[in-house]
Image (tube, rainbow, N blue to C red; front, side, top):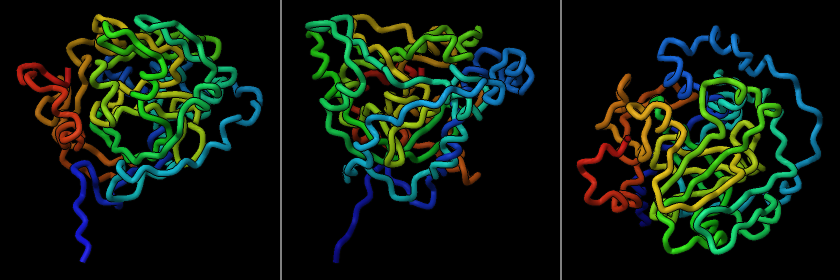
Length: 331
């Protein structure tokens, strides 16, 4: 008789979040930190013209030249014990402050132009370079992974990401031995992204990891989802996924990757250091200053479940933080 032992991060398939809910979620965080918990209503967003419905539609765009790379083979080592969040849920419930403070910015995000798109490699590297996204994809082997996703707002999803390990991108960039951190930046183009005309965040959006975190097997560069190229509202054409951390660490629409020997000033940590910090590891024992992290809502179901340390990925990442018991790893 075959006995299957679930991995620590696996959940029942019935608990997975539908896709349309995921794609409109990132804006809540910015509004809660800058505008205050009660200021996320439609009024402030409309005052700055940031709702998705207020944006002019983008001109038609040529088909994504990477479409033939999808669907990629699924890596059975990275799975969940239940259905993924439906795509329709995910793409219609998302935070993408570049396009508004509403969760419903999928239409506005169509203004994002993803070709041509280049990624710069700078800082402590053997040789700085700038690479087109399609050339970068040719240098990598894509795979699909099923990951849990946990937002700092105390909600969760299950997402089928396609991409490649971040450590392969690190190898591609050839950082110097003195590099201790990797820094990722999104684009800055207020004409293409009306939300960047606001004061809500300092643009471009910046996030970072230690080199040990970046080369962990779980750290993943995402180029697709649901067996297709990544939707614009999810951070096309290149974003990060670090499933043991809160979602604001997973920077979207990356245009620059830099290496440094100093801990970077990341967007949320710089804006509200008492609420959002560099580590941002999922931890039910460390509450947000304004809400508990002990449980989470499964988007698309209305169900709540207990939050698990490191989002259930503790066996894979806990060793990264050995000796740091006194640190608030959320911060």
